[in-house]
Amino acid sequence: MAARPTNLRVNGERLWQSLMAMAEIGKTPKGGVNRPAASDLDRDSRDRFVAWCRDAGLAVRIDRVGNIFARRGGRDDTLPPIVAGSHLDTQPTGGKYDGAYGVLAAFEVVRTLDDVGIETLSPIEVVVWTNEEGGRFSPACTGSGVFAGVFELDYARGRVDRDGKTLGAELARIGYAGPDQVGGGPVGAYFEAHIEQGPILEMERKTIGVVTGAQGVRWYDVVLDGQAAHAGTTPMNRRRDALQGGAELVMAIDALAHRHAPQAVSTIGVLDVAPSSRNTIPGRVSFTVDLRHPDAGVLAAMDREFRSAVAAVAERRKLGSSIEEVWNFPPPVFDPACVGAVREAARALDFSSREIVSGAAHDACYMARIAPTAMVFVPCADGISHNEIESATPVDLAAGCDVLLGAILARAGVL
Ligand code: HGY
Ligand code: MN
Ligand code: MN
Image 1: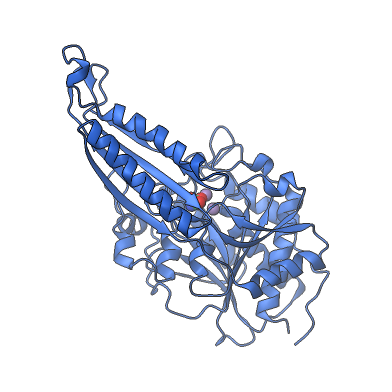
Image 2: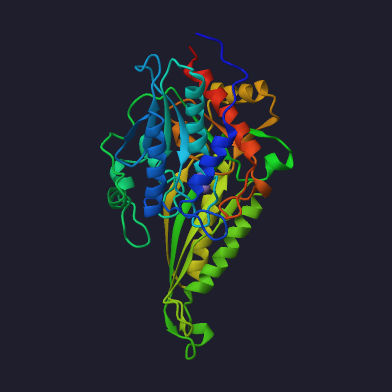
């Protein structure tokens, strides 16, 4: 096998142009992107990606949960593929780079190999995972979760959005309920490039994050039931006000993360009040809870404290309460050899780097359960993501793509 070319670099301008072209789909007035999973805009972004891949001569296949695989053959196509990619669905106030960067960086790697005529021993596949964000359909990382055997296909396809539509029906509607079995085959290695979505790399002026793992996540849906009643005629001591209970829990869940500082985080992203009338005491409140910590034991303690806080408020305010755990995602550890390939690629290219644990969950976290996996991070401005102002520089994005190229070649074998 030939030595890996050390001075090989991707076409950063082409990568940047592909990112800007993709960001046109679902773009928002503030410069962000809003492409909910399995929406028409998700379809349009998928169609654009598939067209680019077919123009580049890649063989494209879609599996039954909508994951897209674009394959570049290797000398020995019986070998397990080296897979790289991310997602194209976004948050409602998403940015141009969260997800799309990982997909288009992997695509740029393939296009660079074609430009210079490098043949690899193993085939390479660029992947777009379905519903990574979990914003429209919870939980997150649904497509990669089915692929990795974490979720059953029917469970994933049955997930329902706030309008009662299922992921499966929506994938069929947009033409991405593919024929192929989901997963089950060997994967040689998986790599994912992503913006850090946090402030560390930028603060430390590091170009590359060598990602060693991610923190654990737990998602819950909470419902509190009190009694709707007249705002004017109901004395304060006779009320069972669901929103007052919810407000107490909003503060308690914030305090919970501070008790486990500095790494714990807690977020309440959605809160609905019913019947939502200014002169009716709220009878029902429902809200989401997102708890995270890099240590599984601490996350379990946070879970216990969260559940006892709900029980205590419900008892004191005579409210009914229910907690549904919709996602339990233990902290993953990435493969040392793949992490080493990322570290070595950054070193060989003389990029500054540091090891980092991801604060966000990624499809790579599920892929780590079935294949040697690692991630490449690049900085984003002020560490801001899941916000329309999300920003990254063409130089950093190209650098991360160069490292992704080096890591993939380290596993795919150069002929
Ligand atoms: O929630 C996450 O960490 C990811 O953005 N889905
Ligand atoms: Mn992402
Ligand atoms: Mn995201």
